Length: 236
Image (cartoon, rainbow, N blue to C red; front, top):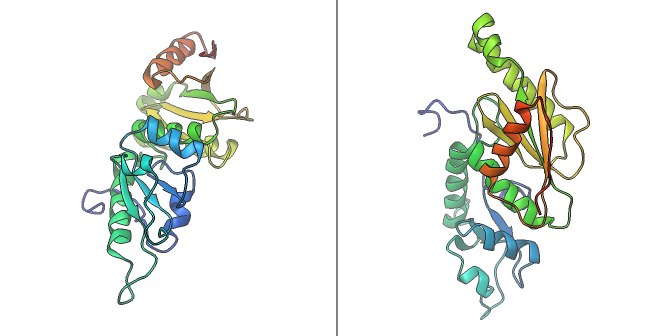
């Protein structure tokens, strides 16, 4: 399907699925059987439709935690035994779902999550590390419209892609990052960005214990960029 739509998305494979879901990815959450961790419970509370799977089978007669049973996105346990050399049906379904989710939440030019994908990733990351000093950075490419007019849109696309690669190289591996708009990248980190992409303006804001609506925060960062970048007062 992705190929027919002209989208270049690497399908999620059954091999290594558990490792993929356990990583800091915006598509879903894999939890171990038994009581939920505080971070997993917080992620479920903040995103009622977050897809969740158990990493292994429960003991005979045991039930999943109540929070999972009441969570609309809970899909059961990933199978561990394959029939006739193929992955169990649920595992295959999860792989298809995650592949489609990648298409829906991935920016095709940069390979980064799009606005929706970033927002979901940020919820998961903050739930997993609630005590960390999170800060959101909005990065605006300077004079991209001029580049498009002078050198063509392909040149502008190359600038966006290069800036995205530079951003990824400067932040933690599991830090949420994405493309917010046409000429804007966004990231949430717990450590300062060592070297922002070249020819960019940047604004940042600290996130407190209560995260405001992301769109409201980005609006404030936009206004800061209008003042040639800077720091937005932190949220409570």
